[in-house]
Length: 303
Ligand SMILES: Cc1cc2nc3c(=O)[nH]c(=O)nc-3n(C[C@H](O)[C@H](O)[C@H](O)COP(=O)(O)OP(=O)(O)OC[C@H]3O[C@@H](n4cnc5c(N)ncnc54)[C@H](O)[C@@H]3O)c2cc1C
Image (cartoon, rainbow, N blue to C red):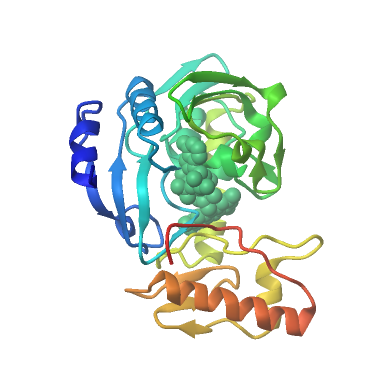
C-alpha cells in the first residue's frame, strides 16, 4: 500500500483530515521541517487508540508530537505517521485541586485556568509554548520549578492501542528527561495536583515570569527555546556568550544576539542551517571552555 491508501484507511478511524506529505514547518515553533508522510490529529483517546492499533497492525513507524516547540525536524521530513496532540486532545476536567488535561492542552492556558481557580504551581510554565503531554515527557521547567512533581497520574495509549494508566510512583523525572522516553506509548491525559494560591497572586506570578521571558528571550523570532542542556554547574547560554558566538549565522539560522542558548530562524532557515549552527557552537565552546554542549532539542526525521 502507498501512503494515500494508508491515509484513506486511517481516515475511517478519525474525524480530522488525515494529511499526506504534511509540511512539518507548519507544526513546529521553529517553522522548520520537511514533509511527514502522514499526519494525524485524533479528536479523543478512543480515536488515538484505534489509530495506534492500526499503525501497529500495519507495522508503520510513528512519532508523537505536541506543539512542536522542542523539535528540529529534518529537511527531508518524516517517514511514517506523525500523531499530533496539540490542537486536538484539549479537554480539561477540574476537580478540587486536581486537573486532568488532554495531552494537547497548552501550558499557558493551563496556568491561567489554574490561577482562575485559585491554584498555583504552574506560573513558571505560563510562557512555555508546549503541550502538557510534551512537557511531562520532557519534564519541562523554568525558574527552579519542573512539571514532574505536580503529576499524579498519566493515561497513555500504548504502541498496540491499549490504554494504560501510569501512577506517579512509576514515573521518574530528571533534568529535561523522564522515563516516558522508555515507554513506546503516547501520553493522552495528564493529571496534576496543584497547590492553593490566591487568584491575583497566581496571575501576578504568571505575568512576572512572562515579563522576564520578554526581556531576555528573542520571542520575536521562531525558535525552540533553549537549544542546549545546561551542563552541571553552568549555563549553556553563558558558555556560548563568553565564546563570542552571539550572532553566529549559518544560512538563515542564527545564535540569537539576545540570548546565547537560542538559535533563531531569521526566515526560511533549514534544518541543515540549524544543525550547522549547533555543530559550530559545540566545537567552538568545547575549544574555548572544555564543556561539551548537548542539545536539549529533539531531532527527528531525515536530515
Ligand atoms: C520560546 C520558547 C520558550 C521555551 N521555554 C522553555 C522553558 O522555559 N522550559 C522548558 O522546559 N522548555 C521550554 N521550551 C521548550 C518546549 O516548549 C518544551 O520542551 C515543551 O515541554 C515541549 O512541548 P511540546 O508539546 O511542544 O513537545 P514537542 O516539541 O512536540 O515534543 C517534545 C518531545 O516530547 C514528545 N512528545 C510530545 N507530545 C507527546 C505525547 N503526547 N506523548 C508522548 N510523547 C510526546 C515528542 O516526541 C518529543 O520527543 C521553550 C520553547 C520555546 C519555543
